[in-house]
Length: 213
Image 1 (cartoon, one colour):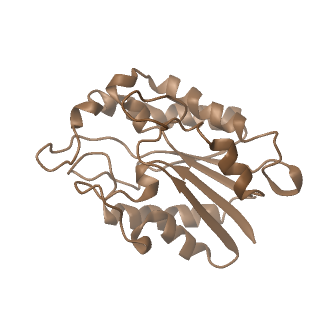
Image 2: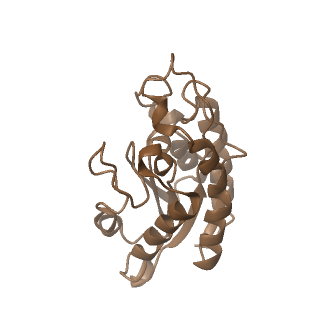
Image 3: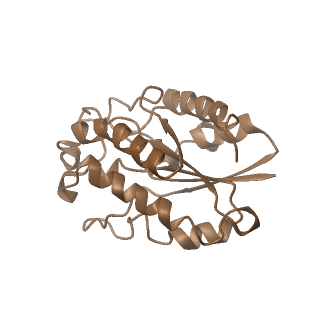
């Protein structure tokens, strides 16, 4: 059996736009991946609302993606494939990040995942970087958080795919851009609809079986 660990934020957790609750287990894209892959894969989900790549958020504690990262990886080792989808929260206005800076944060996570025996036979896990969905304009009347947190985030998020692809190429990681597949809800412009969860899960599951790990 191969172990796949998904490491992400609210869109990996299964956040319901406008409600802040969690989609039922079977409606989350990671669960759809698990079903598509079948019993030969152990799919583990480690997701936290508000998580960034490596940046502290002064408005939300313990959201730095480096926080407990090594502990999580060691606890689930050996990991055959580590899938990371982060970056959306890094785009918040008060964090003052650029896409290239966020990509460096992703690179730091890749480096932390290597050289510590978290993969099979004391080696490294293969790593798949997912560029997150785009951030679009939401409707503050329907959103359940202050959308002003993401002022200017649309342009930053649109650049992440290019910057993440560079990091993946430079660090021998697999890469996929989820933006063409997963569309954020018009409610808040950030979180995935149930339809996008379904589409993303089917697509990611199909792509994973093509990878060597």
